[in-house]
Image (cartoon, rainbow, N blue to C red; front, top):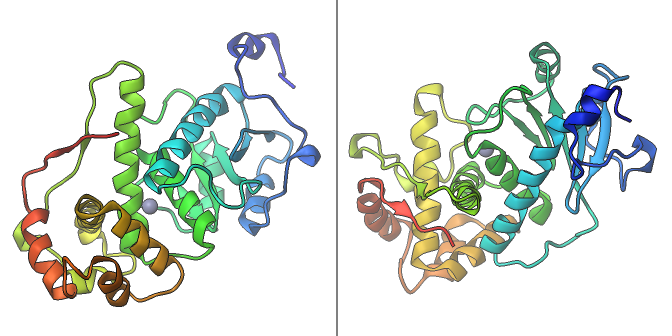
Length: 285
Ligand SMILES: [Zn+2]
């Protein structure tokens, strides 16, 4: 329930409806969820949309996030070549912190994504949001992409694929979101200086990179996904499915791209040139 006239005024007709905790479509089985709700336990409220369950303090903070989350979901599902996701009845939980001090208490428990400042953990998402700011960048879309990949495959993907796809698709989604609001927007991809290029055979086996390599790791992973998507979208989705089901990169590559790249070395030869090209923009669908 709104706790005062002020807030009621800020909630438009379309604000996210509040749902009692016990009446939510499903509870979060991720133990980090309970840890989040244990901080400031009296203040959390709850709501849900078609694909997500939200835990929040103020509905005027949660409402625009819910709109953006569903928008991202649609764009990403389309990029994944799916009209609907499997296990459609399963929703992903999103926890929206507002106070930096609460977030500090919470984040001790989990690994923060250096790129977005959020935490994706096994299908649940934890973010901190200052009510005065909106997400100006593609970080929410990036995290939604992780949620969706986890929902599809129920396992952690190789880091380059998880981060590369999240970067690639969230940039497309953000450009599309802005165009829907009459901004002129295209998705930008960053080129990799040749002297910083990480060999593909190394990139595909990397876990979290050292701080100095974080930005080139994300950029190159995004470029590799974009390169594979551009070369053959069906091939990429086949490769993603294969790796999502536990196949190794080299066999998944030769099964899905065999006619274009004989092996990882052949892919690397072509990709190295593409990776260092000046940042062209992507035409979003
Ligand atoms: Zn990420």
